[in-house]
Image 1 (tube, one colour):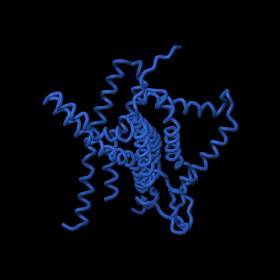
Image 2 (cartoon, rainbow over the protein chains, first blue to last red; image 1 turned 90 degrees about the horizontal axis):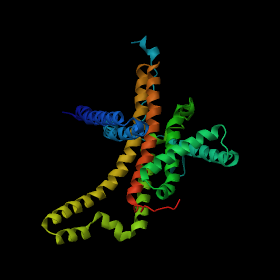
Image 3 (cartoon, helix red, strand yellow; image 1 turned 30 degrees about the vertical axis):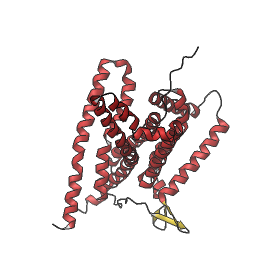
Image 4 (spheres, rainbow over the protein chains, first blue to last red; image 1 turned 45 degrees about the vertical axis):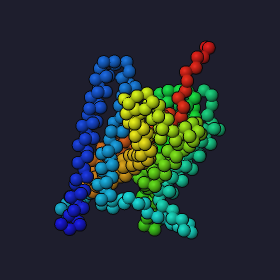
Amino acid sequence: MDLESARLIAKGLALFSMFGSGIGEGYLIGKALEAMGRNPDVSGELFSRMIIGVALAESTAIYALVAFFIL
Amino acid sequence: MGFIDIFRIEETVPGVASDVVFSIGAFPVTNSFLFILFIAVLFALGGAYVVKKFTLVPQGIQGGIEMIYESILSLVTSITGSQKQSKVIFPVVATLIIYIGVANLIGFIPGLTSLTYQKVSIFRAPMSDFNTTFGLAFALIVVINLISIKDFGILGYLGRFFQFRELIAGFRGGLKTGFEATISFLIGLLDIVSEMAKVISLSFRLFGNVFAGEVLAVILLGSIAYVVPALWMTLSILFGLIQALVFGALITAYYSSSVKPETVEREGH
C-alpha cells in the first residue's frame, strides 16, 4: 500500500468519531427538552445552557474535521 | 460539464497556515495579523466614541450596547456565582466575547476579504489561524494559573496537584479511606494533564469551527454558487457567535474554579 492511499484511508477513518458526537448531542437536547417540559418557567435559561452544552459536545467532531483537513 | 460551470465559482481552498503579505525585517506579517490590527483599531475608535457620546439615559445604539453588556454580565455572574469574582473577570471575558464575535462576523462584509496586494489577499478571518486561538487560549490559561498561585500561595497551588497531605490523612484514618485518598491523589496528578488539555481543547474548538467553516464555504461555492452558500453562511454566523460565547463562558468557569470560593456574607440590607 503506498503512502497516498494510506493517507486517504486515514482521512476517512478520522471521521468515525462524529458518530459519538451526534449521539451525545441528541441525548443532551432530549434531556434539556424534558426538563423544559417539567418546568416551563426556566425555559429560557435552560435553552441558553443547552446551546453552550451542544457547542461543547460538538468539539470532538470539530477536532475530527480539523484532522481531516490537515491530513 | 461545460454548462454547469456557470453555476460554480472556483476558489483555492485556504491552507492551515496564513499567507505572508510582507515582512518587516525578519518578522513576517500575515494577513490574519493585519486583520487583527484592523479590528483592534475599530475597537479603539468605538471605545473613544462610547466615552465621548454616551449619556446617562440611553438613546439609540447605546441601548443596544447596554443590552449586550447586561447579558454578558448576567452570563458571567451566573457561572461564577459571586459578584466579587465576576467583577474581576468580567472585563477580560466581555472583551473576548465581543472581539471573537466581531472577528467572526466581520468576514461577511462583502469585499473585505477580497482586497489583494501582489496576488495575496491582505485580510483573512483572524480566528481561522491557529496561532491566534492558541495564543489566546495559552495566555489565558497561564494567567488563570498565575492568579491561582497568587490566591493560594505556591505550596497551596502545588498541593492541588500533589495531594500528599490528604494521602497521609487518609491512610491515618484506616485502609479504606487510604484507598480513596490514593485515588484522589492520582486524580490530582491527572489535573496537570487536564490543564494542558484545557489549552488544546479551547484553541482547537475555536480554530476548527472557523477554519472548517471557511473551507466548506469554498467547497460549496465550487459546487453550487447560488442559494446554497447563503444557507451555509447563515449557519456560519450562528456558529461564530456561539463559539465566542462558549469560549468566554469556559474561561469564566476555569477562573471560577481556580480561585478561593467566596464565603457567603450576610448583608444588612
